[in-house]
Length: 112
Length: 115
Image (tube, rainbow over all chains, first blue to last red; front, side, top):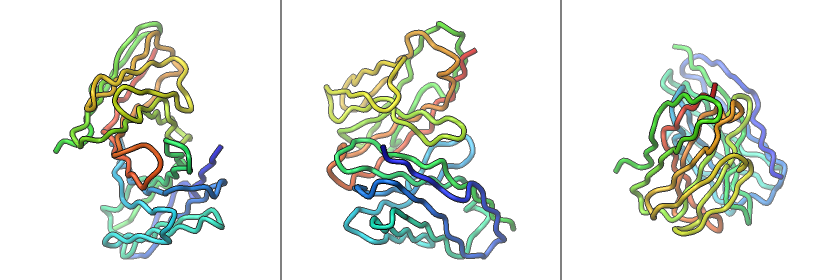
């Protein structure tokens, strides 16, 4: 069974700092990997999806990478803002499966 | 477009009561999913429907039933609620299940407490 781990569980940074969130998975048979944002008491908002044939995807200040051989994905946030404060979840779709396997998330706080 | 909508937003049940969580999507997606989110654990799949007329069990299906009413709607039923089913329930949809880079879109969630 796919196990997805996100470290650290919580992170506080001052506004303007660049930061990296980490996601690791145990089974390299990942078909795609999706990064989500979850605000307190809210649903999940999809940020980026990386297909297994890709190495990275970019959207605005966000850049996500995928290294299947090492079982890792990273989400890079440039020039962080207080509005970026949320929990960030990564989830992998395993080849041949139909559901996403989720990590437990990293709770990010950007301090003004 | 409303995307994925869920009702109700909050619910409190007594042990043994039943209820149905409703989900609808207006993106013409073929596949729909029900997940639960518990503290300290990632979201886990309860049931999914790869296409209209089909449903399959996910990782944690015990105590739940589902109905894919039509292409838009996918409901989750708790026949006899238990405290262990206290959780936040999310519905999601995607263009297709597996086999492609199909992004999943999530609803706002239903917060269920069973006392």
